[in-house]
Amino acid sequence: MAVEQPAEPDRLPCGNTLDSLLADLRAGRPGEHVRGCPHCRAEADRHRVLLDAEAQEAEEGPLAPPDLVDRVMLAVRAEGRPGRRFGVRGSGPGRTRVRESTVAAIVREACAEVPGAAVGRCRVLDDEDGGLAVELTVRLTGPVPIPRLADALRAAARRAVQDQLGRAPSRVDVRVADLE
Image (cartoon, rainbow, N blue to C red; front, side):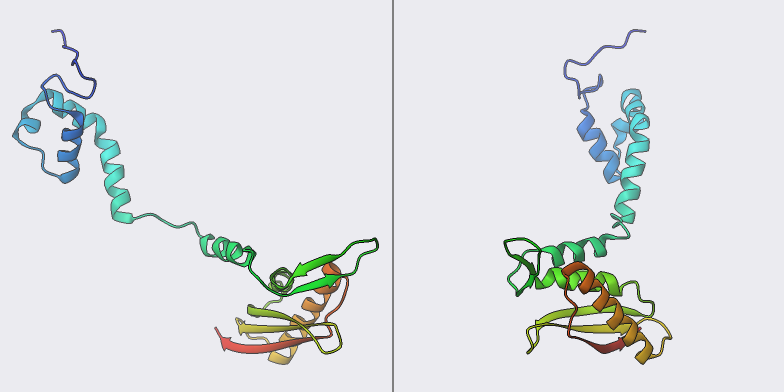
């Protein structure tokens, strides 16, 4: 028995189109023709795996990658936005200016290594003596005594600013805002 090739590639030999067949199957309402037609049943069987996967995806919904929030927040923090700029001393001619958000990111990254706290807000200010002042707002995440935690955060912030900018902050203020 020879099988006739349809004149149109998406039209089945019975005259039904693949699009209408798939639409009926997705809707869960295959008609009388589909149930009785060997061509439609064969195509339905051929597409069953894809239709099942499509239905499962629709039920579960798209899954966000586990690090999506971190990546979005990193991009938000990296966005160019107006802000204060701080001078960095260099050995040669020219000026180097660093935006406050960059200094804050450096401090946040250094403080992330300190167990027991999560840094939320980080502000960098010019202090009255021409130096830098850092203000951290943190949330406690572990059972570490607050004075010891604040000292560890100050040390990490001072070290990071000194290493990256070549100047230590004159003060690092730590405000505990919440407990996890």
